[in-house]
Amino acid sequence: MTEPRKIIIDTDPGQDDAAAIMLAFGSRDELNVLGITTVAGNVPLSYTSRNARIICELCERRDVKVFAGADAPLARKLVTAEHVHGKTGLDGPSLPEPTMPLQPGHSVDFIIETLRSEPEGAVTLCTLGPLTNIALAFQKAPDIVARVRELVMMGGGFFEGGNITPAAEFNIYVDPEAADIVFRSGVPIVMMPLDVTHQLLTRKDRVARMAAIGTPPAKAMVEMLEFFERFDIEKYGSDGGPLHDPTVIAYLLQPELFKGRDCNVEIEVTSELTVGMTVVDWWHVTDRKRNAKVMRFVDADGFFALLTERFARI
Image (cartoon, rainbow, N blue to C red; front, top):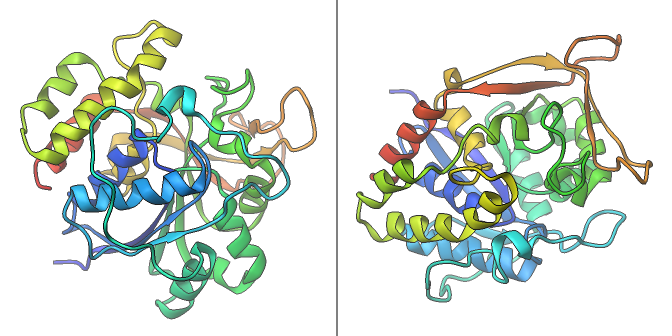
């Protein structure tokens, strides 16, 4: 039996972030969640830090440490997405306020200390929101970059365009300067863009299979998805909305579900029209260094089968 892979989840919950965290909690044999770090994104930091603890308590994982991190992007005003996620970020189910405390200390310091104390190449960073905490950690402690096993992230888009502007995906758009620092850092990156997540629709039959599990976490997740998907159904005219963030955790569990290629990815930080765009050299038309494994295809049925099976274990 191999040791579970050590991960830090950096997140801005968000209903789809909740699904990603729950997928990790349902996969204890494979994944050891060293801590959850929160960042402002989908909703302000006070809500993302609250929501992470609500999810831990819902899944009876009060042992997982939650740290609050950056409350604003590096160089811009915070843009949030209450129009998608609701005022709290977890709108949908009625969930009690968390009783477990936030840990003392800042997310950035927890990330640095953990990467320094664990063996080199032992810790994977799983980022589900803007990359502010990661960029701050890399700036404060450049020595940790070489210690990261891999950074698996949800963010960006190329053939699919953007979802907050025509060119930009939300997580990158909120803090493009942070994304730029991370993509230039040399850390091994796996990128889950909208091109993948838009193939993963919460169709009624898929949600029904989750509902059939019947446990409190599964029930809460179904109610979250029913709230969350209404925005995307209206926007895209689809049966169900895309489920973005669990792709990060699914990749660690079953990488064979995904197909992509190594590309150069640059982040646009200056253009008013395309700020936050991930400029992906998919066809290798430049000689710029390939700095990310960019995913493009996913086995949607396999992904939802994994999600349902692991939710049933919580």
